Length: 593
Ligand code: NOJ
Ligand code: NOJ
Image (cartoon, rainbow, N blue to C red; front, side):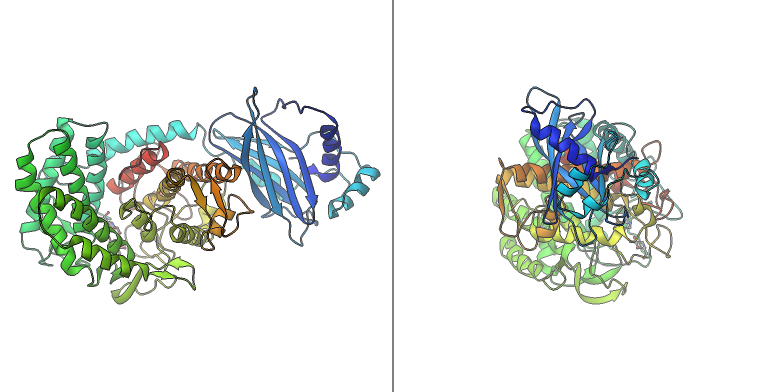
């Protein structure tokens, strides 16, 4: 690694300024120009358009030649017509530590290219004196023995293009997900959370995991798998299994019973119950199914006689229990939960529309509005996050930060397409940044920053996938960031603009450092493309993180070890694969709603 010396850059700058048309380079990445004035370091880079997803980073050393931690992303500016190159811009403010030299790193398709100015730098007193910065005091060629070279050599992310890996992993995920449904020797409609029967025993049908998984199946039935009889049989079996669980007696004696045995009977051991997100997720899935089934011209009596009974039981239950505390989706805390309220609100809103279509009278809209008012109280302006819970009653008591990916999962599973805490909402974006930062420093494997941050459930987590020690990153929490980012991009595109608020400003500043509260970037602006490209790149680095820790056969367990990176916890977790599929769908612009 030969980082550029600022003095030699000045020489290049003089040449470029003197030419009329800047010819594109022959290497994948090359500096066009830079400026450094009043502590603002900006410039433009030629980037060869090798693949859609690219990450271009400018890395510098401070005035004492210390390389650690100084970098800024460059963002797409425009294509250079008639060539395979694009201009990428960067701008950043250099603090009091100063800058002496820099180089450019370009990551694409699993390869990393550099522009470190292989032109021999010569010390020129006239160049030096023309520099207005501390850089002028550093007039020698950089040596190769800096920490930057070590960092750079470890940055190769994926060995193949991430797009093809994501597509391949999505099809593996469909296979593994379907492999966990309707297993021989189990009741029809049984969905194992994982095939693991000991350490941990996940061989149960959780209402939540089953509903979220079947939502993916219903999405397929509603799109590429329309009229597919194998798929519709899987869904009708699920309806049968769930209808049965609704009528049998359970320890909770309520619809919030969290999990059932492979034969469909109630699990009667001690457990955190009730969990009142389950009925809401089930109703959301079944309403989508009912609409799709009828839309495809199938037998409407099956819906009115069988499916609607399940749906309206769940919705009516929600109207009576939503303000009560219950156990959270992690089955640990008895309180009032943002995630649970969000999925309940969505279920009631979808239910109100559905009930109107089928002529079932109800109070769903009114209750949904009350739930929305309660949901708004979870925002903490002092900490700048959506808190995961309030009204703590019992259970895990060490969640002091209030940070929990459950809040982000709520945007995905409880988002109703109305901007109310959906992926692009400023409070969701702000919370996502705070959560990501908390995990970045928590897990050893996150010292590798060439791929996205590995994310767990919440920073204080002690569940290690089998017992209690230290929490680990989870696949579903990590890939969630890719889904959230791609959905946010789709929402900005649909809105035709990005609006920066004081709450979301730190989020946007990651991708466009000049983002300021009050800014509005219309979809034709360069800022809009800078941010959307940056966010898409970040999402793809999340996929690269998942790729790094996935089993060689593509199987995803529940967790991967925070230090070694190897898979741990329940193998082939159904929900991990369902979450991967929905993230891949969001990436391809067809998210599952
Ligand atoms: C099993 C639960 O499913 C999990 O969420 C929890 O963290 C552990 N038990 C430990 O309580
Ligand atoms: C533990 C998780 O915390 C919970 O959310 C999930 O339902 C079960 N495992 C089964 O996957």
